[in-house]
Image (tube, rainbow, N blue to C red; front, side, top):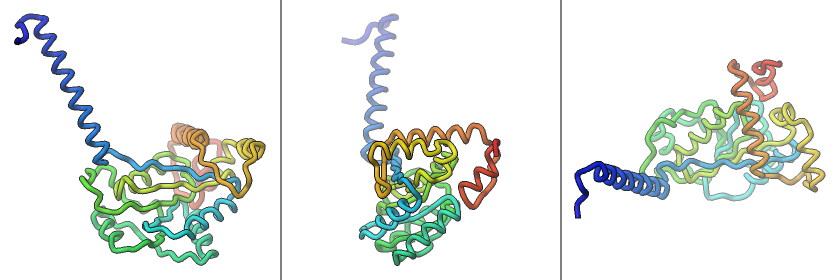
Length: 246
């Protein structure tokens, strides 16, 4: 039986069309989910009590064998230098890698490598966020370790977009400590004291979403209230140059 040609018929056709449209969007979303076209790398945090404990945990992680290429990076030269010093002290072999401007060239570069450890300055990562995703992974998943967060969420997002562009199934971890300026300036020792009361030891790390969300809120507040951004060699210097309250 066909729909009647009256107001009710028009509404019926509109309703049916809307249902088919919603079904089509749902199917597209499911296809995108399983194909990985809209998938983004989901970062995790490894938060330590002290900087010393963080660098020990960082070195321990890199000392374990891994079948993936591992990329160590940081936003600031001081943190990158800390990573180099930590790896050298444990005799962990690594080499410097500068990502080529072309995503295809970067992937060819990585495909030639075995399970190496690379160190790379996050400030040199190309912006591929506007490029269409690959239909299939042209580069095998990598593991990326970032030494500390940037005060601005957009800078952390640049790394997330970069790693996603290589392969959305890659692993991305931020290593940081409660002694880092980002925690100290806005939280002081309150979080550290609370975790100690809860029995957390100095050589243990925490990766609780509550702490990560609190850190993200701090970053968003910094971004809203501090439009002037000058380059710096460390997070502490960045605060001195860019925060309005000095």
